[in-house]
Image 1 (cartoon, rainbow, N blue to C red):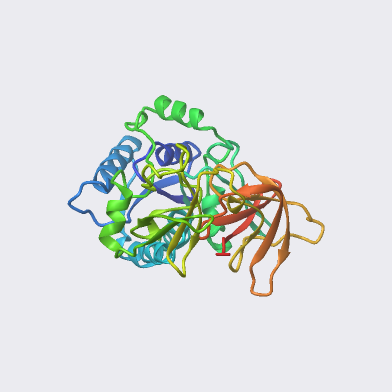
Image 2: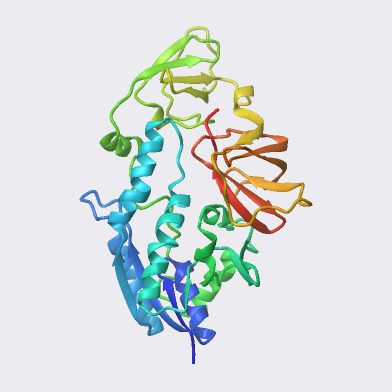
Length: 357
C-alpha cells in the first residue's frame, strides 16, 4: 500500500514542489496549511493570501488540503518568548523557535492524528534514517541550507520526516515548479516572519514593549544621545542609531558594539571592527544535542547565523550543560539570543542559544 505523507503546504514554491515530488514518487499526499498568526487589520500578515495559494496548488495536484490554526500556540511558545528576550536586551531568533515549537511539534502530532505515515516540509535540509535514529544533514545548496533553523528540533521529531528538496538547488526547484505547471511557480520567496512582515520593525515593537530609555555612550563613556530601548538594536548595527552631527567626531557611521543591560546603556563606536565586536570564544546556554560528538571528533564546524560560512572550532562541555566553542578565527557580532549551531562534516549536531557575556 502507498504510504500517506502530509506536506506542510505554505503557499510558497518550495512546499509546492515538495508535494509534487512526493506525489511523483508514489506517495499518497495530503497538504496541511498552518495558520500561525491571527490576521490583523494592518494587512502585513499574508496568511489569507498564503492559504489561497496553497489551495490553488492542492487543486492543481489533486490532493486534499487540511487547515489548522496554531496561532494560540504560536503566541504562547514563540511570540511571547520573542518579546521576553527582546526585553532582556537580546536579539532572539523566532525561526528557530517556530521550527521547534510549531512546525515539528503540534504540526507533526496533528498529522499523526490525521493518519500520516510521514510528514514533509519544503526545508532545504537532508535527513538520513539510520539504525541509531535520524541524522540531520546539510542541504546540497549551501546558500539555501536551513539546518541552522532546524538544529533546535527534538531529534525524535525527525523520525518520520522527509525533506525532498535537500539534494536540490533553488534554481532547480524553480525549474521543476514551472515544468509541473504549479500556479505559484513565479511567486517570490517570503522574507521575515509573519507577525512582522514588511511593516516597520521599530513601530511594531513599540506596540508590544514599553519604552525603556537609556543613554547612548561611546566606548570611552561619553554620552552622545539617548535611545528608547535596547530591544531596537543589535550588535554590529550601523543604521537607525540616530546620532546626529557630533562636534569633534568624524563624519563616519556609528556602530553598536555592546549593550550594558544593567544600566540600559547602548555602547557605540565609529570603529566597525571594534574589539568588542570580535571574539574567539562563544559560550552558550544549555546545548540541545541532536547527536553529541564522539571523543575523536575534536575539530567541529560552527555557525552563528543563517548562511554564515562554517568556521572551524573546538568545544568544551560546561557544567551547566552549555558549550564553550573556541574558533580559530575571530567571530564578529556574537549576539546573545541568537544560536550557535555545530556540525561534524555535513551533519548538524544541534544548537545552543548564545549566552550574554
